[in-house]
Image 1 (cartoon, helix red, strand yellow):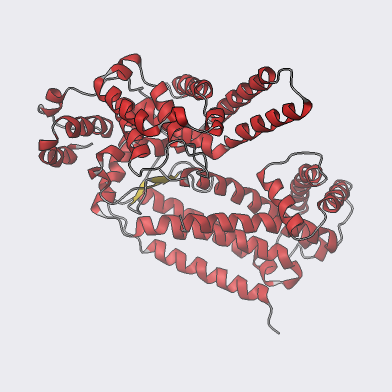
Image 2: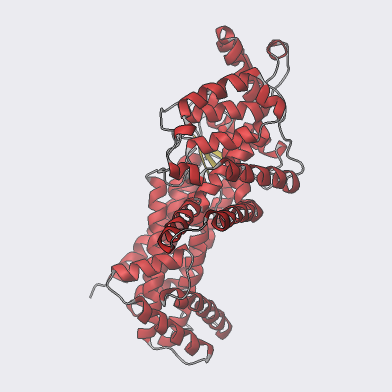
Length: 382
Length: 137
């Protein structure tokens, strides 16, 4: 007599075995993410032990759905290793190895000291997989192919670091949520004047809907933009304008699941600029151009409700203050774009943070020599 | 800048929560079936499992009975029950009874535990779906 439970249990057993062999086969040279491989191996051993301990339940149809649910959890855990980590660690390209070292050093300088290793995967889009079974030590950072050649995207790496920070300190989410609640509570008090009960209900519903727009994923994205702004200053501001304009999307679109409208993301970065940065011609000119593109003044009433200047400024202020408090060793970038003559002068090495500023400066002011400048600079990133 | 950063954090939290719950249900089921020895489970581990499940039910029951708003996972259970033509309020009152039975050390019937396993299955299915979404991003 055949039953499903032992059949599934056997399948999971062979998936475990196969995955373990594939991890064993990963290269472990000096420039490979060996620490990550060890973490994956340890996690796999833990899962194998769980499987062994509970195998009688998996094979016994009397445990029914409980055994199957448990096997489902094991399969999901294995899928995270197999789908998210293994493709990244199995065949590291030269660019991925180089970026791993660059990102690791940058994370250290920016105070993300809990990150012990990083694996970089050129999978197509800039993104981060920041946690591994509740551990923040070994993120996977996904990048576009030849990421370093896309200088307007470079500050995006800091946005991805921000996701690790957002998960590390619950205080960021809690503070944003408090500001959100206080903002809409205040609106509820003042907005309802001498109106009919029906009008009052409509107003309250609209305010509730606007407040609910800011779910945790949208707050996380906005936080990450502010973190990138905090550490990359003017370069990030320009990168955010690129993010908004490059694909021709409407800047005030409130229908993107999990994301705030691009306009709100650009605006919080603008509010985080120092007065000197905001007044600098590089930033001012690009922002003026973006304003014409974004047409924020013509945005619909829902955008104006959920992304009012008052609320976005509240988010900005509270996050900038908290970053200074919770990450005292993280340097805030309040500098202007570097002087082109200084950039073109001799140098021995460049940090990733410096590269983000200088590459955009050269592209902006001496595009004619960008190619030769960049060929030399990319070899000197530390 | 994809939403992977946020999604992965959520998967992580949900996977841990569902992992704890499914492990606890195995222990309670083993006690009902008289198979604790085969799984090398001690009475202390079963007591710990019962505490975990009754905590889960205590916070879920008011949501199913319409007396609390609930977190995203509890709302998912509410939605799945409704979609499956079940009466969430019935499940809510059953879960309050099951939790009381656990706390009073009354042995649960397999049918009672099946109801808990059913809703934990919704959460397990959702985590599996979230992992699939990672692949198709």
